[in-house]
Image (cartoon, rainbow, N blue to C red):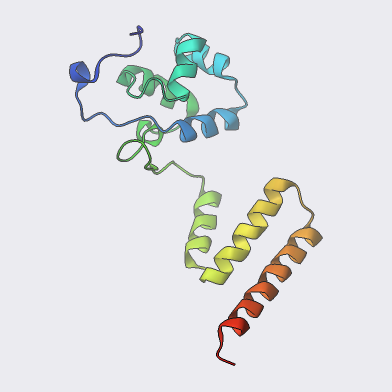
Length: 151
């Protein structure tokens, strides 16, 4: 047991679990290392590493308040909704919310094109390469539909 964590029974069993993915994403946005982030909230780097890697599922609320404050988000953005395996809503920028709204409003085919585009961007593909991938995906989908039709 470390100084910054406590048994669940002492603080209550209803405390939510830490959303490590959200914490990592927010740290990356600031360009900080784990050591820098730990220093800013008054935690040892090794304990902070344990927190991010899921070894400390339920840290003290005061620790999470400090973390939320330095990351510039509401505390609830650092927790999972219902425990391990569930994603919590992470606070998004207006631009991210607009993109999410467009994705949700798209048809299934449109969503697939958006995902191909996003994967291409992440992989560092050029616009021409991404367009070619989308065209290929569309052609394969058309061929698959033709193959399903009775002859």
